[in-house]
Image 1 (cartoon, rainbow, N blue to C red):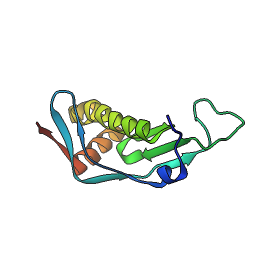
Image 2: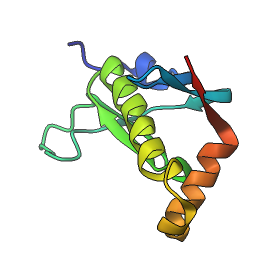
Image 3: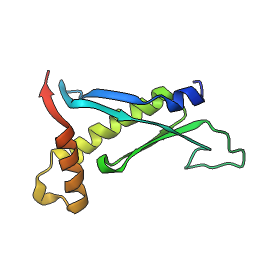
Image 4: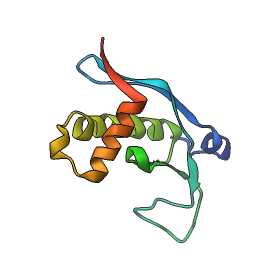
Length: 117
């Protein structure tokens, strides 16, 4: 695995769709653009070195916050996070959600829909 370089960190992700294992796909109406930012270190295990080998993507309105050491891992984590949020909030009845999670659900539904096949 190659660590993230400055060029990789600055390159935004453009996500058009997120597939589920069952053949369904979350399809965004417009590309979801997420821009990684460099982190000085692994936030869960900081060290004194402060080497810039991690990147972070945050999108609080979508409840996305992931970090990784490589660009491939970062993309994988973002897609996984979107799937998880869709299943945990978007597919759940509104009455079972609190104000914060209902807002996240509405934001996701404004940006995307699920299609079969």
